[in-house]
Image (cartoon, rainbow, N blue to C red):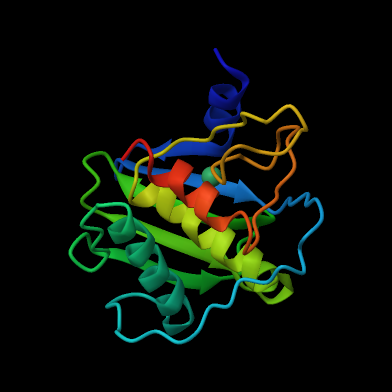
Length: 179
Ligand SMILES: [Zn+2]
């Protein structure tokens, strides 16, 4: 079993009564330079039912990123919902979904969100949408220089994050690559 798969098993659990999978993501970010290469988020131009308004710009940017890569990315049609909560176990966020992916809900930890730059805010929302919408699991693959190849890293592996305005397009190519 690959390390990433093992970590995923640890982080994810199934509540069998409701057949809901939940994947919590640790509040661990290790960043190399260029964190000051800030991603500008802007305002949302539409609303997302069942989604906290603070997440709308990120949802819209995710849809745009998918469409730019040829996918009809529609989070409203998919009924992805999202909320802010005080997550007890120190997680930054989580994605919960049922076995056939007709229900998917993203939770974001209030304190973590308030402490994050826009770079990492987009990172964590796109990571959770990677689980919830793209059905991706964790991937700890690293380049030779130790930098994570994917924003789907668990945060518990060895690789370091490097998501900023200059690397965004490359990371989003990787994110949507298997979709
Ligand atoms: Zn995750």
